[in-house]
Length: 344
Image (cartoon, rainbow, N blue to C red; front, side, top):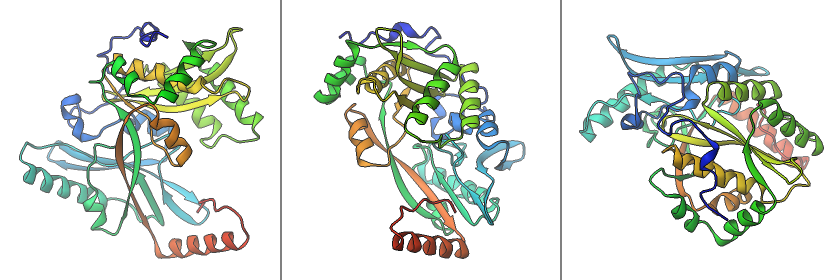
């Protein structure tokens, strides 16, 4: 298998930055990547993902924007909640750096973050996962938030394709090789083809779309139209889709956002698509972000690609009544031997 076989599938310049809004006051290039501004902070993304139900906390000094933090406004029954919107992997504060002195920079970040927190409405439940470039959540911890850690894998743009291939586990390489003998990776030009395949696979497994069918359709169409993402398909010899993957990117990273595989398709379809996406990220000089994992099975799959483990901080704050209600619900669920689904 030729490990560089995917490079001809994209035509845009690798240096293009496709996102529509990256405020110069906060993040204008990779040189200011510490501001942690991502595609998920884009106004168009948040408008679609939340149905327009979001607000922005901002801190300014005169006309200069020092920091901002978007948050989702929602209700679950009687509760006022703020969580990550559908398909939005990370959010968190975006702080403009002020210099190279680490002590002064830390104080600045603490001051701006504290002022952002003070602008948040009173929620019964607030939860966000931060971009990996946010290295601490001390200002949140000091104001009653619980801090937790999530993880993802990264492959940096400084890696070459042969280096990434060599770092993979032998099992993952063999799966990719085998899949490549029967499947061909091509760009899916029409988002409708991707979406129909995704929904059909859910239906065949008697599952519903956890992100919302309408929200997913609008986001997929939006990132394709804005050239801020791409849809790839693995096709068999008869031209039938075996698997699909959805990718989005900004000026720093390419994110593994969505994937789906037909029940009867070869098991290596998604592995082949991920490998193709990694090669594209390297060609675009972007970090490939595997977009996190929540269980041992997903960890086992993603770790085989040889990425570097990265931490994402999560912050959560609950009102007393909400916390009591959630505890009672969990207790009742355990007593009835039902799996708890956090829908409060």
